[in-house]
Length: 456
Ligand SMILES: [Fe+2]
Image 1 (tube, helix red, strand yellow):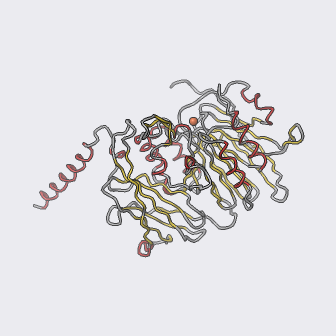
Image 2 (cartoon, protein in one colour):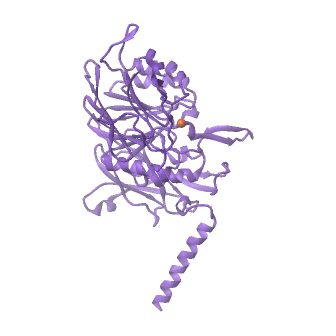
Image 3 (spheres, rainbow, N blue to C red):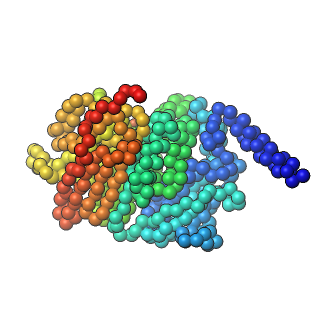
């Protein structure tokens, strides 16, 4: 009798699952929203020492959602004292993009506030009843500058689940103690296609909720959609704002909200810019934020590189508009994507009509983490000599991730391949009293432009 009852329950469960999947026969089961939370993404909102935001997805059956948070304890008793925060729920209609199969999904966002600095927390998200995520740990930032490590990824973009997952997982193996993951644009290929976002979230899995993420809008985060006036326009992914809860800068035009912001983390200012839209409108914001005292290091992140390594590309506009601002405020490091190849270079301090040899103004990196690759033409960097660009290292046909560590006046930059090996390294040292910086090249002895077989 018991066996028959269990068989009945199992068959009922299978039947229910099959029914859910048969609504969307073209989708894989993990692409379909359910009442269980998925696509959990941790982001900055306010002071990193005392707050975080978390965003997740469900199907429309969950219209009231919650997050719980507690200080992590050695045993599981934290759960008994967890604080509950009600989430805001956004109904997202995916059908404006004809590529999408599902219709309505729900995205939920909760903000944790009044956290203690430098404290390990544990949180979960769900419906407040039985549909909860696992508990996930993160540490709040310190109030004062302290050493930390973060990872950075150039474009993932294509075949993300199949061929990018190994990169983000290799980054976690190399730097499990990293606290921030920067995604420098073109996270996927077709901005509004939910199945591609499904692949991006599955590729990173729990890391998207454990590392605090900084997504940056690339050109592929914009795509054509028919608007209310029936005109087709290139607009930001209809999933960007629902699935990433990011800082809103009220001084900026609404079109830039949640794509242009700063995060001040343990003495480092991260400045996220949107190189797709309203480039000149961002200058006043850059000047205001870069003028804020209190940051020991300043790192700018945007998608289109100032010194493009790719064939047939040159983003002259950004050298005319943004670079003078980066120069003026001595931004230390610029992290970029878009060109599907790897290039690291630097610009020395300008002196009169030339540049002072052996000095450092700004380090520029273009990188790629996904499988699509472009070539670097011979002599490509010659055209940037007048802007003082010194090409330090470049590589083709390599999926990269970067681990960047900051400890007092020392920034260590490492670029590793998907296979985990170190292919590029440089150390920037900075004297905070004078602002003077030096770069020490520590490039490992690996041939530049090594030959990769066309096919195997
Ligand atoms: Fe791009």
